[in-house]
Length: 314
Image (cartoon, rainbow, N blue to C red):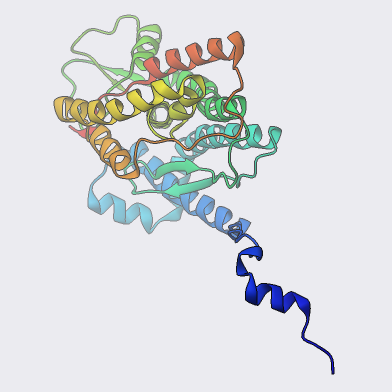
């Protein structure tokens, strides 16, 4: 008669010798590229409608209904749609290409459709792997805003070259956009005789650049896992802990002070998500003077793109 295997006796009498294999969490399955394509096409439609309404300078419900039901009018919104998608796409492709350079798994951009006032809530990529080091974190974080900003500059110049100056007596209606420092500098360049009471009838392409600059400003905020948070964490973990928490409070307070609804919404959103940043694998890497210089350039871009107030009706 054969005896029972010795292994069973060992496990029965000495269970402490047996260690079960570690449980490895299943990797997230990447979404089908058809999801990216569907989001992109839907965003094209919503930005075409938004661009048409901006070109017609009429945001009334009746005009919105007519535009939605008349696709032949959407060609009026093509300059706005194309310009905005180029800026947002450059931003996200900056992140994506940097991820590919460092061998970090990331999805293609997801464009997010939005209401017809602007047509989109921006675009995002999904990074499915941890950052391999501080240099990778810095480069991936800063690549998007710089790429989007570089594309926004010629878009802004093109739009202002096709904008017109309104006299002081002219009636104003439609959307009123709060300019950032860069837009103010550009306006003084294209309209040197601009008086304090004058207004500029801006081309829809300028609105696309404005949205791109707003996205750059919000993403460069040194909070949590925003692009600015990535850059700051790569520079100093300790500084990120302090600035990220204080930044949320200051963002909400500034929004309440200047009636910037977008600041309040973004501050509340990141208060819910949390100000923390996950650790990186290579935390001992040094960035070097070159990346510090790039960080200063990103800071200048942030200052140029600060938009304190949300657009309003006039």
